[in-house]
Amino acid sequence: MSVDDPSFCGYPGFELNCNQDGSTTMEIENIKYRILNILPTTQTIRILREDIMESICPVDLVNTTLDYSLFDFASGYTNLTFLYDCPVASHFAEMDGTFACRKSKYHNVFVQPGAVGPGKCDASVTVPVPQMSAGNVGSLNSSGLAQVLQEGFEIRWKLGSKTCSKCIEEKGRCGYDEYSNQTTCFCPGPPYASASCPVATFGLPTYGYAPPSPISIPSPSPGIPPPTNH
Image (cartoon, rainbow, N blue to C red; front, side):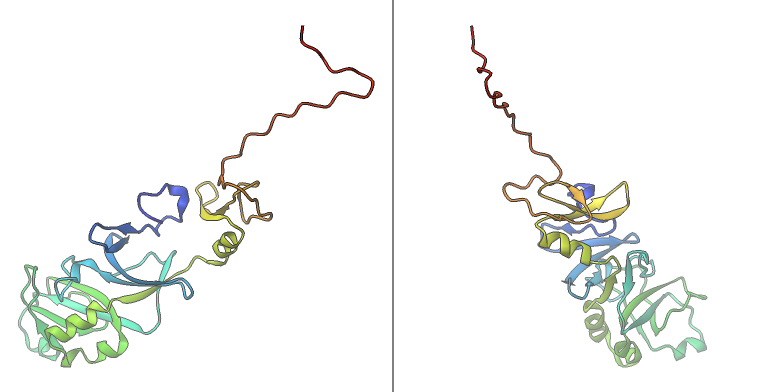
């Protein structure tokens, strides 16, 4: 659903923002992501943190986390940790690489596989990357690391799509019921909001608004003349 749509159009947390530059973004746990691809058949979305679109290091010093009631990370990914402005010490020589980050006040950034805390560094940020790429981070230069990050990562949405698929097949529109906190089907005919649309109603869809009932005039009973106007 789009952020401009009414709240009953889709499940909260799945709002997409269509930008003037043609890109599509969404927010998860207060981090904005660029939508790279959506695969409904596998219920996966490939996303990329907006704050690393022009820099190899995250600008927003917030770990990449998800709302796990709605999403989960796809398989095949592991964390990469960026450590900002660490003190020069012998044990940091074991780290895999150091990079200068554009559009950031930090110029001394170490990158290490796995999820680690900042320790004596000023800050740390974790970002998911393919497992194979994380193991080779020590051999990557700035352009190689940027290429890995620009691929983004895949997440899966947990809500089942069978209900919506069945609703669409029955000429309904999938939406969200704020009272039951569940997905629902808005049907072109009665029942207008239901788990499914059992009977296909032809004609103009109303989707929740019942058409006015036609006014019928009963036929006169046999032997009784119809009323006349005086």
